[in-house]
Image 1 (tube, rainbow, N blue to C red):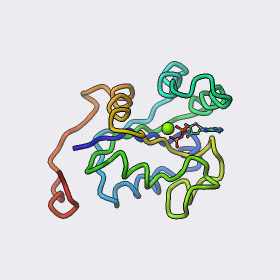
Image 2: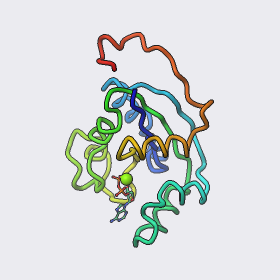
Image 3: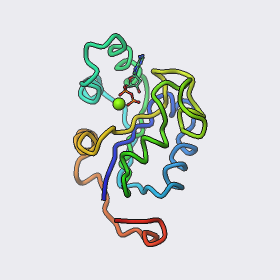
Image 4: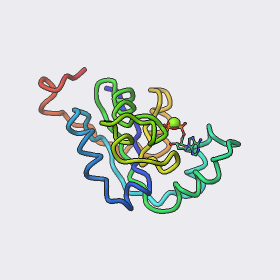
Length: 150
Ligand code: DAT
Ligand code: MG
C-alpha cells in the first residue's frame, strides 16, 4: 500500500487548522500510519528542502519551517501520493482551486500550510527522513472493502 509524507507546517499549527486538514485526508479514505509533532531543526529543514537549495526563496523557507512546531504525518492508501497532492492543491494559495486545502485556507506562496510528497520515490525517502521504522504503525483497516484497498 502506498505511503506519503505530509507536513502540517508552522502556519497550520499556529492557525489551529490541524483538525480541519487531517479530517480531509481521513474522510477521503487515507489512513494514518504515523504522526508526530516536531520542532524542526535547521539541519532537518535543509535535508527536507535540499532540492530547492540555491533558489531565491530557500533561506526564507528554512526560516519558516523552523519557526514553530510542525506536525509530520504518514498517510497510507491507494495512490496516496497523488491523492494527497490533489487534495492539497497548487503551491500558490492564490492559484489553488477552491475545494483544495490551499485553495480554501491559504493566500500565500510560502505560508501554504502543508507539504505533500510529489512522487512515490520521494515519498519513500521523505518518510525515512522524518520517521524511524518503529514510529510507523501497520494495522489491518476494518473498512478497506468499503473504501477501496489494494
Ligand atoms: P509544493 O509544496 O507545492 O510541492 P515546491 O516543492 O515547488 O511546492 O516548493 C516547496 C515550498 O517552497 C512551497 O510549498 C512553498 C515554497 N515556495 C515555492 N516556490 C516559492 C516561491 N516562488 N516563493 C516563495 N516560496 C516558494
Ligand atoms: Mg514540493
